[in-house]
Length: 151
Image 1 (cartoon, rainbow, N blue to C red):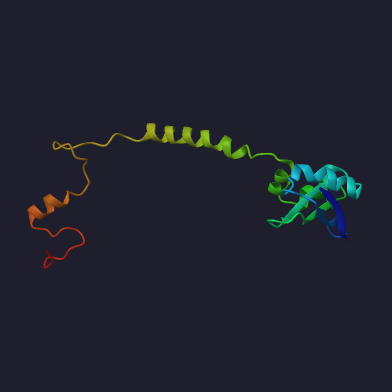
Image 2: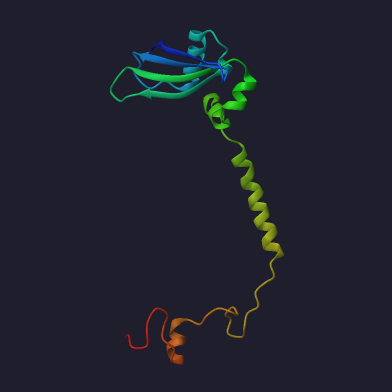
């Protein structure tokens, strides 16, 4: 796989370089982990300051395009780029979602302990619930969804 810088734009307002890179002779779409050090070496920058925005590699071809940003320092990178872009490029998985799941389960357990048991009538049904359709017919009331004239 060969990489070549096809376009370079200096963005002073965001303190970064926006780079377009051409991919040649790539059998498969390269991973971000594989591309970051190569892009940093091409541009003469630190690997930590490279954020790959987009990789475009069409099916059946050996050529593609990459759009990347190379920041001047890490502070600017963290201010501008969304956290999930940085994590995606570094290959880190979100641990926050995994940590929240057990907490929610504990909350539900605590809520379940706070609820009082539902009192049951002599028939064994919970109070406040409607009677089944068969009992309504026996009382002369029409079943739900039907009018009195319908069969």
